[in-house]
Length: 451
Image (cartoon, rainbow, N blue to C red; front, side, top):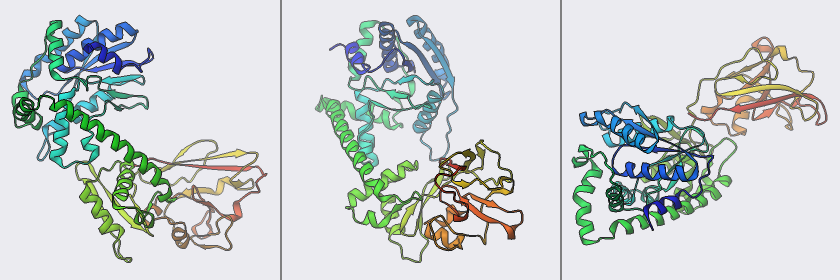
């Protein structure tokens, strides 16, 4: 099968409604990719453009934008150059920092219907697998690079790697047959970079002894990707029954699982909070937080000071990741039918003829939204008698760190005169609950996503 046939097969699910963006460095891989993409776009009536990222890290790169513009122009493709600043410093990998800057810029350049194409090939996949082994990674790392994944600022954006099953040698042969010219990056000979060390020192020996090593390594990555998908599906089955109404995960339910299954669902839950723990961190969360003595207030910190830290805490038999969202904003004036910004969420009051949350006779001019008010009492809907809010927090399982950000809808002008009408999203006080068929006020609260 020709290289173009393989390329077309990988892009078979695209339609003319999609637009293609090629990450174009000017090197061999991305040059072949752009040539194939230009032919494909022409054959299928699709929009295509190239984006060249200028990292500004070496003098040799000064002429690369012009080269990329000329190659793209020859193919009838528009090409944009984006200059980026690479954040380097102590204990920061230059490779990783450049990759982060590059992908941030590519993401920012994408429109709603764009599919990003990158020139990763089979040799890159084998390198990624060995680097994951060096780090002691689990199946997520050993799955290496997926052929497709979500990427970009819009829900439908994705990154595709249509050359992932092709060897670098096959790309070189194609480039020579087509008479293509490309940039040779001088830094590729610097073995202080991990990938260069593998490419220049390790793989020649491996391939001399085992010529099909890259192919079999890529197959191993595919098998790991299948196992990763199974682990994800199992976690998605386990998690709903373990989560409580406050977003925590119940320790008793976790204890009923095997160690492997517990680690799997914990890792999945933490990834929903944008946290990616190591195995040692998972074990610390279990031993030092979940199983700490009953009177302790344990926590484990994840992340780092540069990128931001998060905590995993325990409260009433559940694990939590406290939010790091905005500061709550008290609202002394509530306007109808508008979403009002309260810092940690949005509030709206609107009139409805039936299915109301609050009684019609409520004096809206005396309503206000406040936070962290002490000394309040309330009788939640369906409960007998009122109780101090401090007790209600405990009964509803609201962790201590969440209480200051919980919205309190109050009525009254003076502190001593204030009554708790509702805690949006938690309960309505019985005195302000209408009958099901009565008209009244609908109370809506949207919690802001975690930072």
